Amino acid sequence: MKLWTAAVIAAALLVGAIAGGATIMALLAPMAGAAEPGAAATDPELVRWAFASAAAAAALSALAAGYAVAQVGTAAVGALAEKPELFGRMLILVGLAEGIAIYGLIVAVLIFNRVG
Figure 1 (tube, rainbow, N blue to C red):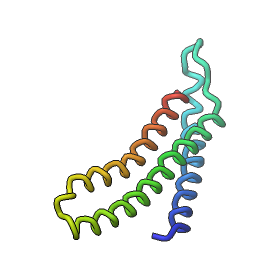
Figure 2 (cartoon, rainbow, N blue to C red):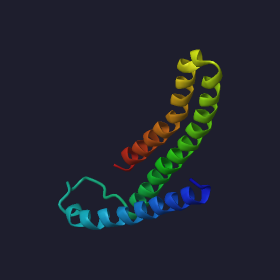
Figure 3 (cartoon, one colour):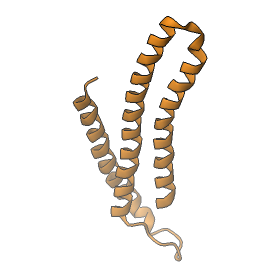
């Protein structure tokens, strides 16, 4: 996949998250009046930016993980062609590269928890 294609996909995810956050807040607005009297209302603009930030964290980390797995996987296949006993080590390296995407998902969940 070309780098510009990945950038277009990431931008589409970001725009979708912003629009989705606005739509969700518009749907939840009638329920805000029925909340507890002491509860503070969440600013819709804050929620919109939270959705955008979470989408950016997840999308960009997934893109980075895909690139890292492609690079490490290519090198692993070349090394395994010469020394098949390195399979376990190469598998660990590919798994570490995939961990980048998991870190992005954790950051996205932390952003959502912070907003409420």
